[in-house]
Each structure stands twice: as C-alpha cells, then as structure tokens.
Length: 504
View 1: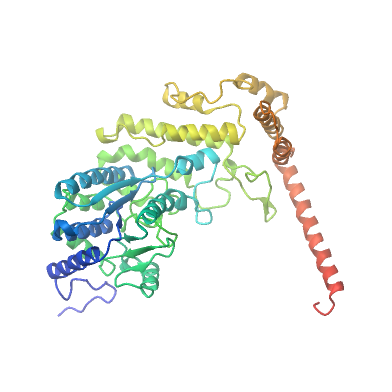
View 2: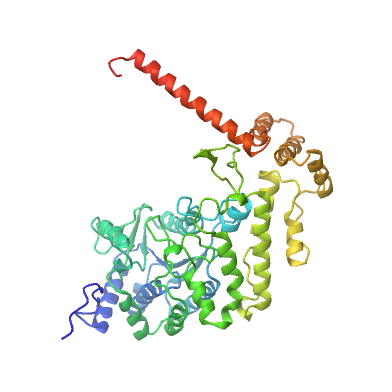
C-alpha cells in the first residue's frame, strides 16, 4: 500500500466521496441562504475557485423552492481595464450567460461588471499623472483598480439592506499566508460559517470551499456540469494554456493576494518577475501571437530590478517640486513629459496592432478608452501646465486619424510653434522653460476671475517647482537644506539638555 504524501493537501472528499461531500455542502449553502434576509455578494473572477464557488451557490438556489429564493444574490466581477484580454473576454461572456440563465431559471441572481473610476485607471495614473510602474514599495494599483470598485458596490448593498454576506472562493491551501488570515477571522466567527469582514463593517465572509485542495476544485468542475451553460472543460483548456497555478481573486482588502501573485491578472502587472501566463499562451498557441505587443510593452514597463534602470525616464523632483536625497542622489519622481508621451504612443500602437492582426473577437479591443485619453489630456494641460497640448497630435501620429475628443481649450495661449519659440528663448534650459510655461498657465487660469484668491500661492508653487538651474543645482541646494536641518536639530537637542539636565 502506497504511503500518503505528507506535502499533498488532504482531499475534502476523502471521507465521504465527491457526490456525498458536494451534496452536503450544497445543503449547507441552501440552509445558510434561507436562514435570514441578508443579501449575498459573490466574487467572480472567471478562474477555477470562483467558478466552483458560484456553481455551488447556483445549485443550492436551484434546490430551494421558488418561494424561499427571497433575497438577492449579486455576482460581481472587477475588471481593472488592463486584464489579460483572453480572460477578460471569457469573464464578459460568462457574465452575459449568467444573466440570461438566471432569468430563465427563476433565480434572484444578477451579474455586475465593476470598473474603476476614470480618474483611477491604470493609464490615467501612469501616463497622466506619471506614476512609475507599480513596484512592491509603491503598489498604487491594487487599491484603485481592484479594492475600490468592489468595496463601493458592497457598501451600497450594506447601505440598502443593512448587512451583506460576501461569498468568496478563498482556500486555505492557496498559501500559508492565506490560511493564517482565514484562520484568524475564523476564530472570530459570531455565526456558524460566517467570518467578520476585517475592512467592511456590517458584512460577513463565507468561504464554502475553504478546505478544498486544488485537485478537489478541478474534480468538482469536471464532474459537475456548469449550471449557467458554460462548459468547464473550456475553462480547463484556458488554464492548460499557461504554466503557473492560481487565479486572480476578487480583491476586497490588502490581505488578498494581488493579481501579480496569481496566474490570471493584469497584463501590465510589474509586481512579478515575468508574466508567465501570457508568455505560455503565446508559446502554446500560434493563434495568440497577437498578444506579443502587450507582452513587449509590459516588459518595457518593468525593466530589470535595479535602481538605475528607469531613472532616465523619471524627473529628479517629486510632483511637488521637492528634491529628496537618498545616498546623496535624488529619489526619482514621476515620469517626465517625454516618457509619458512615449508610453501613450506605445499603448495606442499596440491597440492598433491587435485590431488589425487579432481574431474577430478582439478587433474592437480598447486598451485605452477615449474617456481615459480625455482625462490624461486634462491632467497634462490643466494640472501639469503642459500648454503644448500634445495628446491630439500624438494620437494622430500613432493611429493616422484625427483625435475624436473634444476641444479642451478654444482659446489657447500659444500654439506649438509659439511654444517652440519660448523654448528657444529659454536657451535650452528645460527648467526655466517649465517655469515660464507654468506661470503663463496660472495667469490664464486666474485672468477671468473677479476674485483671484490663490493666485500668489499658485505662482509661489510654480517657482518652488522650477527655480533650479539644473539637476546638479537642485542636489547642491538639497544637501545644504539637509545639513541646515541636521544642525538645527543638534542645536535644539543641545538646548533641551541645558534646560533639563536631569533628563539629559
């Protein structure tokens, strides 16, 4: 008799077998659903764990008589707008199928695709504001793209109904970290099977497959037919097209692994060494070579993990204009105007390539929407005072067609020609040019106002950002400022000791 592998998770079906274990779990879900009037919110990502969880809930609802299906069940899927296109298409089709099937089967279930607000999208932050590609110490993406959309939806449900139960496909076997988090909240349960939600008041978390192994999930999906009409074998095929394990979960707090820790996630994710899933899809299927521009752009966003690699693309100042030193060198700030313009052109060209060379289902793909382009343009011209208004010209150069957006300014201060003349007048000094440009922008903003409160503050901020002659000048000033602060702290400490000798 072969010995059991101590490293392999014990199957949740070992004692009762698949059929009896699943039947018992469906009965538990049905009983829990019918026990109160608290609505359910099911997190669905399109991956195996969330599919298995939703399938169990669906089967439980079908088992209940119609007069007991009294409370709503919301299926939510968060689309970051930079999801792997293959998975995004799969999820979109799945949600459409769910809505139709639920209506035909008389289930109180509705499917919802959630997206981040335009001002929070990946490209608005990276290309518009100049945020550098996400990294472990500056992971600005998860909160904006994943957590906020789902949190806002759940809060709306809680405000309407008073409480909500969040049903997730989380499993303890995913990782030791995940198991510890789940066990922590499990110990705080006030009702059987319902854990408190650590970040959303008046909401509970139910994880029906928390004790399932990876093999359990696939065994269930292959043996039990999908009730909303999608074949689980197609899901398996999609997984077989890539090499790593896991899926992109519904992210509702910072303890949930990001898409970067899972197999299917954002194609722009720079929180991992490589996008192994996209690489594998391209290598394993010649028909997916249209994804190559995405992989190339992702790799350009994520140069080798050394401090110097993206320094040439970034300003030596922070967004406020402050210069902060680390080992006597400026800490890089946001992407420069030129770098942001280059990123925009690359995204537009990748989008155009896919529309021309991709299969029919992605011919209308939108890597960056018009709403995002309009917000990027507003940030560049209004917030960053880049009066050149480059975006329409970059769009036309990249796609060889007119920019379809609205007129941002019917009365610009100068055209591109005049801005070039201004640059020449500044004798090639980029910082002096940026200072004059921002002062002109500030003057234009406040000129029509009867009460110009804030004008002097805006002008002061402009001088604070751009008064340096060059980067070396800024570094010298930062060193002097740092030294003065250290001396001031030393004098203050010395005065404290003289005033309080006992404390000293």
